[in-house]
Length: 70
Image (cartoon, rainbow, N blue to C red; front, top):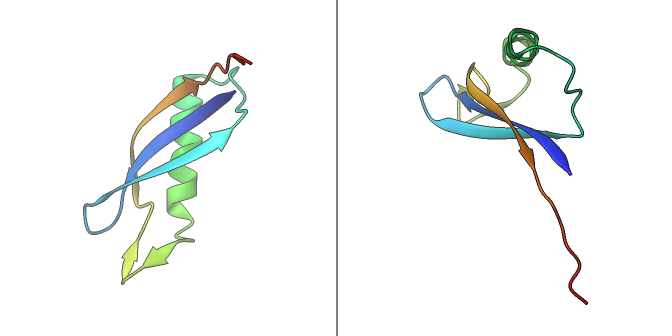
């Protein structure tokens, strides 16, 4: 399974992880960053007075390979 895993800073400076299963890998890094920045600009998620996904810090693809052993 492939995931896009992004690290965001909230408006208080604390890190939060967000992931998305089966992302489109045809986008360029600049396109992915732009899309993640748009998520942050929506200000949809708040906790304890902070915007949770204020600024995107990093992103990576993570692939999990499962091998059944029995």
